[in-house]
Image (cartoon, rainbow, N blue to C red; front, side, top):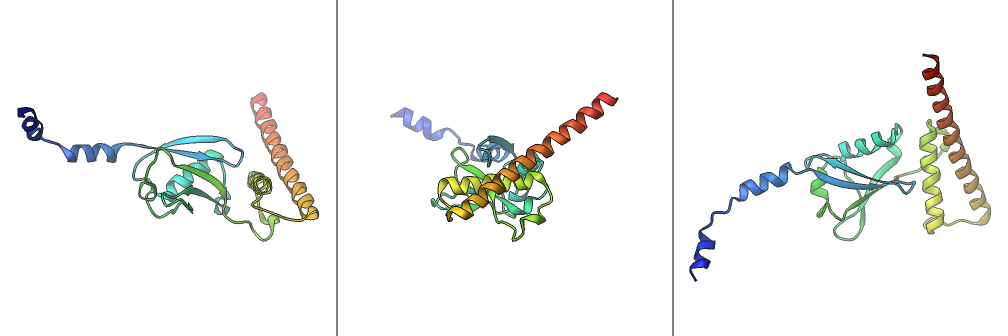
Length: 174
């Protein structure tokens, strides 16, 4: 019986525990359109916009206004990461949350996209939506979309190879 009272007399330093949790970094997992995954280690107070910019920086993506980070809310529905709120306030449990980097909206005229990477990411999104059935269309439209997917993928690959050749040439000429 004396042991019970000994436990009750032990002081609990709750503020130290809270401070430790506030200083602890978050490990946030992001799934990309090419099925790759990356874990970002960020400050607990990071805003949604800063985290989103970090993800876009990892991809070297400049036309980021078309994209967003989606995650499953603790209520079970999928929601967009809000840019003006801290990430930690939007998620309940960081260990099982996965963010999905996806297209938030498509421009009315894809010709206005400036970068090959953006077109490539759009092609991956369309491919993913067609394969999982979230985008349905007739055979003619599907054929047109597949041609856009192939053009977007090949253009990005050609653009990437061109950039590599330029870098190689600069290295060789030095």
